[in-house]
Length: 310
Ligand code: ATP
Image 1 (tube, helix red, strand yellow):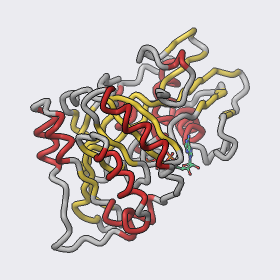
Image 2 (cartoon, rainbow, N blue to C red; image 1 turned 60 degrees about the vertical axis):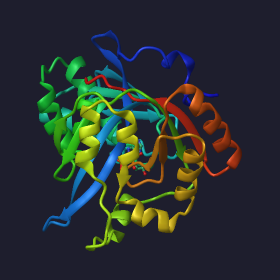
Image 3 (cartoon, helix red, strand yellow; image 1 turned 30 degrees about the vertical axis):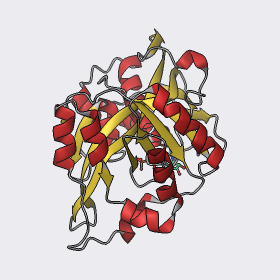
Image 4 (cartoon, rainbow, N blue to C red; image 1 turned 180 degrees about the vertical axis):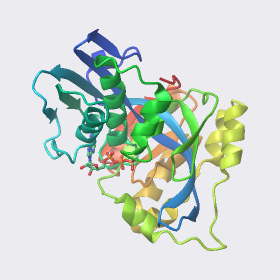
């Protein structure tokens, strides 16, 4: 079984590599939601959410080098990603340069492994890594809380990606309450070959009195009790009411994972990625093979809970 799609040497250890003061190499961790509820809509159109956020051990690698020339230069292994101001790492670097009047430039090399537009906050986590990395190599001495504030200017998920671990996110996703560590377990992740626009999903969401909401408080309670089964059995994502109708493959993936021993399954964020929590490596192996054989998913990954806060 293939353990994530990344070079073997990146699978060991969880700390970031720091070589010298002029360059830094960081892991940008993906997230899953263990619960996602929409509880209302603000006057400005933004949806108010209650989500349980969890970092996992699947990551992009972000290398940042100081340069004498003032430009921001971005390169990446994925040809279809923008390398100009439309890339979140570029935006993050520009924000740091402007905010702290940094004269030098940076060369950012982005090795993408987190599936793109998948509901796993890949871009947000890359941006968070740039904030953290530039704080270190330019010796800015900023506290994590300040980096989180800056992150919010780049996107609602960025503050969590700065913090990492397990958290309850409220408001539009920016009000974070740190939670005790989630019990460790293996995770099976399946990304079907369909694209889902987050904006479209939220626009299509119709909340009526009959809409079934996930019980976020119960998920939080089970995390506090260290009850893995309790978390897994109560996971739920209100956005599935939109995406499952449009992409039945999401339901099929969830069923297949359950048939093969998942304690619980859920779509992450606005999808289309589906994940399952498992009790042991042994349990996940059969499920991985079955998923691969089914052809339902374009990419299949195994990962695990990552509890270390930054
Ligand atoms: P979220 O879970 O926060 O909704 P996501 O996983 O759905 O995020 P991303 O992979 O972060 O989505 O990116 C979605 C879009 O953002 C892509 O279409 C891509 O063109 C653009 N983008 C900009 N910068 C990046 C980046 N560094 N990595 C990935 N996508 C990026």
